[in-house]
Every structure is written in structure tokens, then in C-alpha cells.
Length: 255
Ligand code: ARG
Image (tube, rainbow, N blue to C red):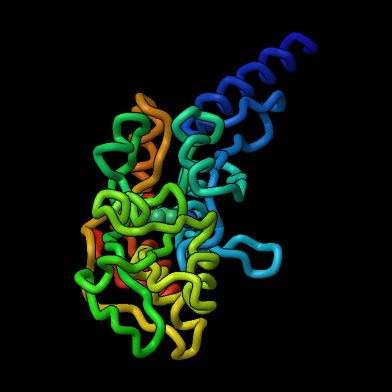
């Protein structure tokens, strides 16, 4: 009898391992526990990820939770600097980074990306009545951005006078206190941050880039990416993703 119990327990453990193989995360000693999907983000990027009190909320967070649920995993979110989130995903310290991350060729050299889930562009925020009315007006001005982002890359590539901040809200503070002349940041975030200034700042209409967000993971993590992509596909197909984006007043354009 004892032996039978042991064998059954072993079989059960094996089944758990097989069933939960989708979560590339921590190997828990306790096979009866749900496996953990670890995720890094930078919760200073409203409406994709931001803090509401102690809680990390946002469209990316809801999406990641829905993916974890599909994979039968517990989601463990770590809030860190944006560049650390990217490095953490590329080194495999975290299973994935979900942080409004633009999938581009340069990053593809050092990390793996899921399918796109959101289309974005860089946008300019200026104070109301600024003489800057578009990209041309940036010449010779001091422009703030978030460190390690595609916005920063755009400014560096264009040889603009750039001031990088740890977070996008800090870049906007530099604008409202007159320390810089404009901010370049992802469009939806620009709108959300500008809205908080209650008319003191405006977002210019001109999109500076064309980008798409994807989930980042370690390079060569193809089995994991297939599972993430399957989950994403299912969430697109059953309308969950659309609902999540609508909740945060984001246009949903995934196919
Ligand atoms: N889309 C931009 C990039 O990938 C900015 C992302 C910043 N995200 C954040 N959670 N702070 O570089």
C-alpha cells in the first residue's frame, strides 16, 4: 500500500511537471504548487503599467495576468528600472519583461520577442503655447526622455540635445518646471501624462516613429515564446485583449 501511495505521488508529480511546463520560471520543490511565471516591468508608464497605491496596474499587467492564467501559472511581478527589466529578460533572470517594450532589430540581437500586441509611436509633449509645433521645432532645444527607451534612441540618432530621466513622469516634471523644452515619449503615455497636467501641456499630433510592443524574453527561448504567442492569439481571438485595452482607453488594433 505504502509503495502504491509513493508511486501515485510520483505519477502526480510528473503530471504536474508536464502540465505546468509552460511556465519557464522557478522550479518549485512542491509539485502540488502552481508554477510561477516571473515578470519584470517598470511601473511608471501609464496606462500600460503604473502604481495605484501599492498595487501595480495597467493594460500590460491585465494582459500578463490573462496570459499567466491561460498557462496555469502564478504571476510574480517585479517593478524595476526599465533598462534593468530589459536586461533581466535577456539574461533569463525573469521569464519575461512586459513594459510597453518596443520590439526592434537592435533589441532582437540580444532578446527574444513575442508577436506584437500594440502599435505605438513616439510623440512630443510641450507646454501650452510653446513655439515648438512639431519635429522641426525640436532643433536646438533641450528634449527630455526616459533612459534606455526608443524615445531616447530617436533623440540620440537625430543629434538632439537630450536629457534622460529614469522615468517618463520625471521627464514631464522637467518640462513643467521649465528645465527642458519638450518631452519625447510613447504616444499613449504622452497623452496620459499630459492629461494629468490639466491643460498646462499638450501632445503634438505628429508621430515621430512607428513601433510595436511585444513581450521580451531570453534569446532562443522558443518553446516558451510559442506558448506565450498561443496565449496571446487566444486572448486576441476571444476579445479579452480588446476588453483590456478598452478599459484603459487604448485603441485596439491587433489583428
Ligand atoms: N516603448 C519604449 C521602448 O521600448 C518605451 C517603453 C518604456 N516602458 C516602461 N514601462 N517604462 O523603449
